[in-house]
Length: 340
Ligand code: NAD
Ligand code: TYD
Image 1: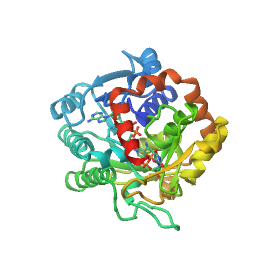
Image 2: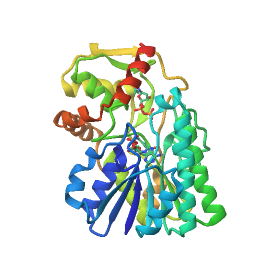
Image 3: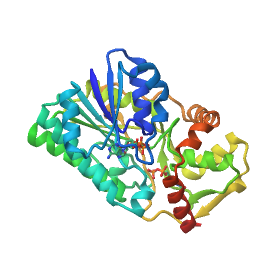
């Protein structure tokens, strides 16, 4: 099976490509990535070395580039698209929503249209629990929860999900949508909570916690998410939506305190800063349907996954250094200066 994986130089895409190529021998991957500030080929240098020229092929390009996407689908003999490419950082979407619409909405439409025109037999679109909006203290999201996105990021992801639905209903395109809760693990860009806090704590810098820090996220290890996407690709029913989660709700403050304890750093590093506008209070993912229909079951316990993740960032200081480009530093400086 020849896959066009988009956004494969990002956090989850890179883990997915590594997982697929190292755990199976019936898969080849074309990785289409624009290499935005969040994409780094370094995350796949081992894969390039091992599979480059045979089962792995990298193409630098934009999913919103219609002629490029269509020619890749036609010329590379692609059997399925797995769409990870996106602008993904909620804070950046608050500062400037435009690129989120260009990539997440228009880019997805370009991919869907190319898939329709070429008669592609399989399309997996990777989405998020954030499309469901915020929960109160009780209950969990299911695939039937109405879409109620609150940030420009989640609104753009919900829009893409609806386009997937429309392409299935109108054209019969065999699209599967997956929605996952917050991921953590190796190669996550250090703008997201867990790697950012590891980086700051290691440097003995203040750890910026938004508001009261009691917002709840439902953390899943990236490898468990990748195994879910693999199941959706191999066994998903066209037109279906699958939620993936890990039954692992944690308040942000608890996560930050646990990281400090693992790193042997004092809690006095915690700084409460101005809250994120429109901040969703709680996410919790129900994934019974994916369990029943796909056999999905998360395998990695949070305590183990978090310790391994801290160890990975400690051992990969070069990667961390390399991904912090000028564009990264510029955004981080302005955003956190305003919140302090
Ligand atoms: P990321 O920001 O780490 O990586 C995104 C990748 O997409 C980068 O390599 C970037 O260069 C690439 N990209 C961006 N715009 C592009 C374009 N126009 N054309 C081609 N490539 C482009 O993101 P991530 O955390 O790996 O998330 C991957 C996907 O999973 C996203 O669709 C996201 O919405 C979804 N998701 C993420 C999480 C999470 O916790 N990180 C949870 C659920 C769903
Ligand atoms: P994030 O990793 O940005 O993921 P998302 O917003 O997609 O859930 O944030 C996770 C949680 O951590 C979220 O409730 C916001 C909070 N947060 C902070 O408190 N401080 C920070 O500096 C960041 C980046 C996030």
